Length: 242
Ligand code: CA
Image 1 (cartoon, rainbow, N blue to C red):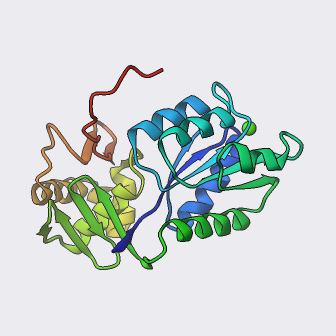
Image 2: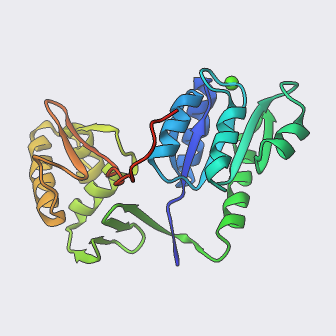
């Protein structure tokens, strides 16, 4: 089985740390969902699949400790706890809360990435780390193999369409202006070309079968540009969120 891009839920209320860690992990090709409090963490965890959670202990709204216990009720996902020195005795975090590993602040991002890698390797032993496959519902993007499939059917994209799709999908929810997409996808910087992005998007949507009026993946942001969204999972009837 090929490794798809690993998704990491990053829960940290200190924005500077959150941004630095997210940037570092993204550079390592992890897919990062950063949130700033415990409630947001549980909300994201309920909605999406994650391969690993990086969880600060002291958080607004719901503490990291409670988030950890809550997650552990339903999931074995690897969890790395972040804690400031002296917050809680280290051993308690490791042994009682169910975290797999912990780091004491301040830590180096490199150290964190090494721990992330080690935990993911433990969780997914026999996979090829070089292969990058992004999956969004029926849409699968083999980045290294330049291959895109929708519901198992291979879609033939031009180089620009492929670049456009990987650019948008790497950061779901991020809005890209036409100008940014021109630069990233076409590699030049000239206002007259902004509308060519619209035609690339139109063709890409047609090939993926993505209806612009009711999009699954690619959304128009009026007056600005485009953004990519991860399709919502069909969720089984669940009791009211408590
Ligand atoms: Ca904190």
